[in-house]
Length: 504
Image (cartoon, rainbow, N blue to C red; front, side, top):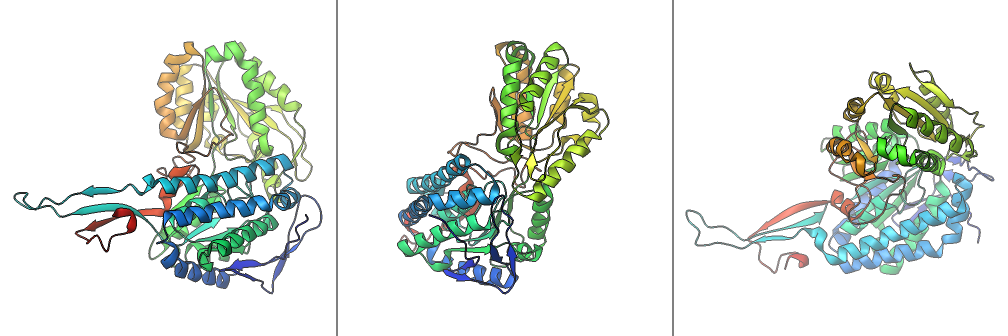
């Protein structure tokens, strides 16, 4: 079943076009005309979201759970259409899109079950102590409440799981917050068909029409209008450091600053300890090559840096990595702009002092091939540019003279989404020294694996100290992410007849 986009925006249940259009630039096939977003559309969507909040924000948990399940059902019903247009727009293989669709519907259903349990409300009650001396204590009850309309920016690299009905949208709707999504220009057709699924679920479950809107693309003025609209109460963003930081600053500059939950990038360093290297260095190299090139290196968690100790094992590891990457074919990148930035980033890396080329390639337009470089830890420590993310399948091996220098590399890291230790039992003393450092630097620390798989569950943290994210206390994956769109309210001596249902 082929899906042909109509190229309009969904504003509070109405598909709306604008005079100005732009032609999409898919990886395969002809482009489609899409209406360009405007600040006026943002205003209409935000006003509708605020109106919807007065109803949606007080719905029962069971009602919102049914709504989330309905969205998942409608997405699944359009599975073939989503895969077809998603593959055409992004160049991602069908299996990847189908897996991501499953993750997207799984997130929605997970949040439905999560809110039914009620634990996220963090309900607390201090009973009154009227006879306490010298002063009595009043009746005090506390519960988390939804904050209001939320803006969500679709991500380029995950057209489903981090976009229109992705984790930010699922968490906000679960909390009771209407959502205005700014669709990403890399996959507008995919955003449209998913928005149709959400709209169908709104109709099916009799939700207020303003609970969800989609504004497609547009220039920077559209994004600025969205984050600075006085009715928007928080922003969810996954994207580049430069773009995210600009939006973060706009949120902070508002007359009423609002939280900006941005996931901005990470190099996800791995520390390869000597016993593990001696026992299975080549196997680790092969695994790293697979993780580094997964999705053409366009995952937030691709491990771009491997820190090793100088010696024959390091040489074996470097050669095994080079050989494995050499066998990796070209992969289509998401956009021409991302591909160009990748090539430029690789060239900039190669030009840095002390950097050695282990594997270089010629990339044809959106076709990306891996790059591999090596640098001494002393040069890496003296050049912050070497620790910047290059979005794509580029790896850098950092060679430390000794354990102390390896620890210095860990200490110098900026905030990361993940950090990995590859270790055997004999590496425990060194790992014990590194772990306290890495847990300060990253939101997720793992051993003997690769961070590209991000499980959607209760315990997951997908965030970290800046610049990995703009809020080190938050996660954009897992049930804990709902807390971004809630705030605590204390009710003092409120009669039970007036209390929210969940507090009685």
